Length: 314
Image (cartoon, rainbow, N blue to C red; front, side, top):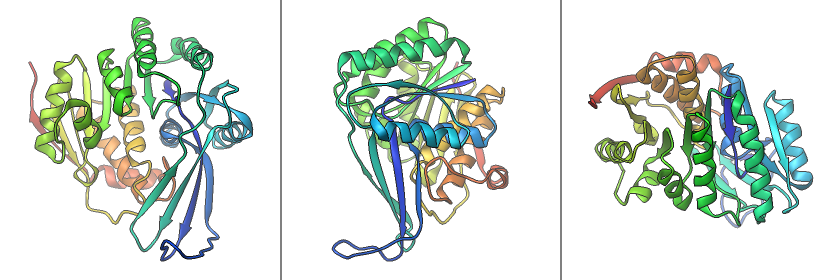
């Protein structure tokens, strides 16, 4: 089972427009309401791939009830920690078909008390024994110190669980200090954490080496249209997707992570797991809504993803 730890879930409302511009009045008849936040996107994508998964997330208020209901309606299993910090946040995703991508308007969410985080962390640790791999995906709730995430990672690692982290900013820095088994971030997030520029493949390769030097066994950096580079003991690999016309890139990185994690759980080598992940991320960019893609489209794209070796570790 894949355990998906989602510290800051959301109710996602995606609205589709044609020719949107600021200052006008527009109406849409295409709205998608879904359980959201990066971890829920990962879970949705994993479910499409047929990968058993369990989401751990803290939920509050009526909005939290809606997130749990929507997740269940999609077949996503959840272990929800109820809190009293306030309503689970709502995020609005605006898609303009003429613009070629989406705009995300994200709420920060409620402010957690120490007891709220402790209850959530306790539920995560209780769920850990049933997992073969865990991913921590997304931001931290307000009020939670980054060190709390590092402590949770250390506890999970002490229980023998491999954990892959996808977060940013101070939370990522705290996670790296806890030496997680794996890290999957985008170029901007990696550069901010490592104090360097990661705008291309060469920059990403240098960042991979830095992450591996910090004790990360599996490091992956996504680069948008350039694909993703990743490294483990088998070597360094670059997976390049075919050129596509993007509809919405929101959630593409989460689908990539779901594909990568699913591939590893199925015993694929890193280059083949990376190929699956990039195919999932690319298929996601062709749809509206985070973590959504057509499985047949993934299989079609999978054979077009080019994977090449870019070095080796000894």
